[in-house]
Structures are given as C-alpha cells and as structure tokens.
Image (cartoon, rainbow, N blue to C red; front, side, top):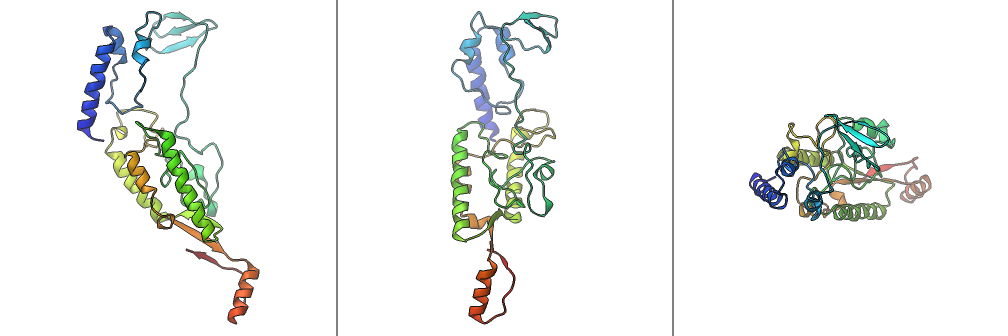
Length: 264
C-alpha cells in the first residue's frame, strides 16, 4: 500500500531485470507496463536464466490459430510445436459459485454474490448458518504464504465450532453487524491499493472490477483479527426439545410450550 515502498521495490526489480537479461529486446518484453504488485509477483531464481537460453524464445504477440503441429500468431508467423500446454487461467473469483448454496429465508449464495463475493474474514457469510469456508474472498496473500493463511482460518473455525458445542447450539452464524463492519473496513483498505485502480486489470478482480482475491493487510493483521472470541462476531441459536421444555416448565410450575429459540 505504501507508494514509497512500491517505488523502491519497482526500482530494485527493474535493476535486477537489466542485470540478468542483456538482450534489450527480451528485456523490453519482460518489463511490465503496470506498477509492481498490481499482479502476482514471480518469485523464481531460474526465470530469467531460462529465458536467456538460446533454445528458449519469448513470443508475446497474440495467437490466432492452433493447428495439428503448429501455432500461428497475429503477424502470420508459424511456430512448429510437438506439445502445447494451455495456461489459460482459472475462475479465481467464483469461489463457491459452482455449488448451489442456500441459506435461511430463501437466500442463495449465487444471488447474494452476484455483485461480487464477500465473506467475514473470508470464512463466513451472514444468513448462512453453519456455513464455513477456507480460501474465501480476500484471503489471498499476494506476497507470502497462502497455506499459512488457511491454517489461521481453520484454527478460527475450530474455535467457533467449539463455542457452538459449549452453547449446545444447533446453529452458528456471523452477525449482520459484524459482517457489515468488516466489509466496510476491508473496502476502505482495498481502495488504497493499486489493485483497485480501474486502469489495471488482473485476476485479483472479478468481471465488474471488484477486488475479490487479495488480502490488503499483513499476515500479522490477519492473525490478530482471528484471535478475537467468536462471540464478538457470531450468534448461536439454541433450540430446546419439547420434552426438555415440558419438564422444565413443569418443574417451575408453568404451562408447557411447544418450543423456544434463543439468540445468545
């Protein structure tokens, strides 16, 4: 998020490119037109070394057709090929949209996420009791360990489930207030990042331009937010069975009722 830090990293990355790639044309092709961090940074000690090899060629012009043994580019150049590996990407912003997830009161995750997916700490959604996920919206660490982020989520989900069990609850759900406050906090920080700039495209955004993938703060901040107790952001619903209620009411001398639900 710091423009000064980004400028320093960009200067270092450009210098590193010029030092390792002597061919000016190749260096020009490799030089990004967007600020560093806008897209996923490549961390690989062999990347430049591989491209410098005489039997490796970097072609950046668009492909117009693929034949049985060749690829044709926009300029009409035909490139013979024995094997083609399609690295066409993946649906990074869909998350759970390939599954029909239904919540309470007729909620549908596909409909609720039509304008862009959002979830409390990327793991829970209001109106969807007992639904937990990992690797949800805005939990991708662009410059760090992603398995570590998921482990933090799993630890928090486990804490939520233990609390639900302690309360003898039938459901647990993130509160609407907690979900809204978190999303407002998240949107404010995402707005300050280079990812939110409309002139730059990346898989960090969905089709409408909403930043749905990266986490805008540090890994430490993510951990701190998941250290709070579940009762600060979640609600448990306890439903007592009829027999239990009858016995309890009779013990107190009250008339029995059919059922009760309590938000705790």
